[in-house]
Image: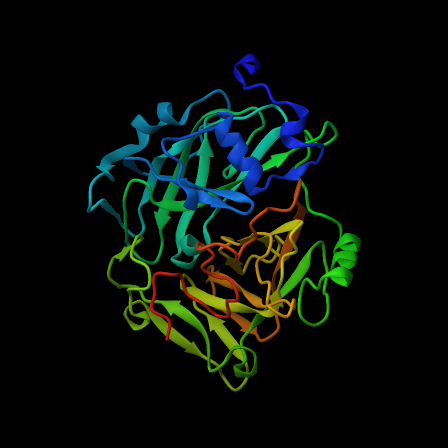
Length: 384
């Protein structure tokens, strides 16, 4: 199997290990390690590649993982209830509450030293579209084993709104991690808090005090003094379809209820409701790091943040070099109502080293939709 991989010279990837930058992802495409028809310039992000939906979606009865020595395509016939074409101008509507498995246009042929991890894109998370990556032989979602060779699939389940998608739509993104010989079996690549303190001294990671707990602690902003009179949005239950390709065309009031600040600076999360909130902190991701939002503690199960949150190098950079963007929080309560208070800890950012800084940082291209953001819905809505 390994003989099929393109031979890579040491100079191709240098001697650095960590998350690969855009320029190395472009090299992977040229070397056939990422195979796809007509990869678009807009797919390349500073530290990730946007993945595109293929021509057909398969509605399935339930989510699944293939498991060892099994292919996704072998599992689909037993679970599929309908096959839907995404070709053409109209594409197709993915209904709220249903689960779909969609083959992606991209295929991988990774060497033994490179693995990958996936996340929903920011816009996907803010529309409450539950999206996960599946590979053949997988026992977990959103992870691609080193030396993987084969197709990629997206599991897609719209939760709040039905959405119209077409072949080529981009709902999730993939990052590639180059490993040295001591890292081949590792699963945790977050850098230590002491290293984050050093980075903060050189270039502030956050406005205000640095609060670390195996990553940067994030608190929710629920006061008018922090984010303004409107401190969040709650998704309406019976809104119209959203076309993924229509940017800046939908009225907020047709899809969201405004959540206004209360005098006690609290918010009661209703079970099953979906909220868009913002972090108290403003962030800046240095050029040599990337970050991912994770739970503050797995035992804190009363609510969850949707975790579309992958932060590219350069996110939040302001003209005065200070941290300039809040993290947007996609929050859903579970079985019981839950009270959030202004400043309550709600998640953390785990940082990871880049193998090298990207040549183009987040905010320096036309596809950086959320640079400098405060409380902000997805790019599909007309902001007031």
